[in-house]
Image (cartoon, rainbow, N blue to C red; front, top):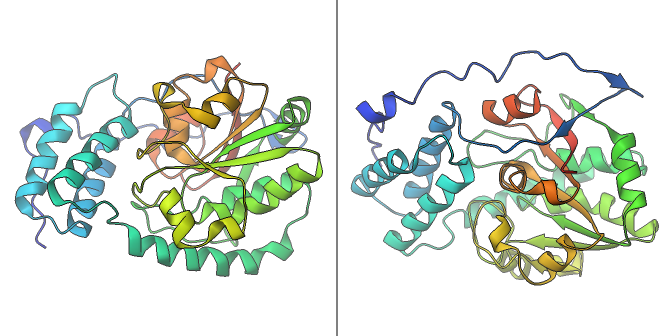
Length: 315
């Protein structure tokens, strides 16, 4: 399908080079781990536009849409763009619009099959190289966040750069209550998250692994759980009850809300969860584990694109 140029006059006004993504920032080191904490709300930056354009083009193409639909999506992005909007906020409206227009509810279905296969293969290659400690398990979990729809991601353990305040996270995890809410991201993440889940279980924790109710992008959903038989890998998989990237406060419901409002440990995987949950994590501590995949998030956490991180946010 021929792609139209989405950069008309209005989008050129906001499409500038992101100045922050690769700047080096000073950090304080403790026990060979950088102190990383985040207590701000993610908003769109100029450089988010290229990712949103890429999302529109790829999703329209995979959904069987045409140039007319793509043009409509570009107008929608312009309409939604503003200083108080978040990348997932625009993405979710855009994805729902494409779904309604095409009737395709899982355009990334085949991509998820490929990612799942690659994740299993990569995990088998790297598992023996990692320790069974909390830090080793967090490192593996972060590596599992390698894949995404807008980058040519791979599980590359040779160029794996990880940083995080593991000692602070260790205190947070071990001091909090018995329950753990782990909010998953992409389908490949679950495979790499299992060592962390098993480590926490051995420490007496009860881990609930939350995924989307319905498909969105290459995020893991309950339909994927049934399709790939993932409850044979881990039985305590629960639903967020949503079909959106990330998780908004007003969408907390059921077991997810109950755990959020309790003394449970909360671990959120991936940028979409980081970009949304950071808007209300002042209510409680949250541990974020992810790969930094774009300049806007790199700016927010003061790390380089491509770095794998574990950071603490909230109170």
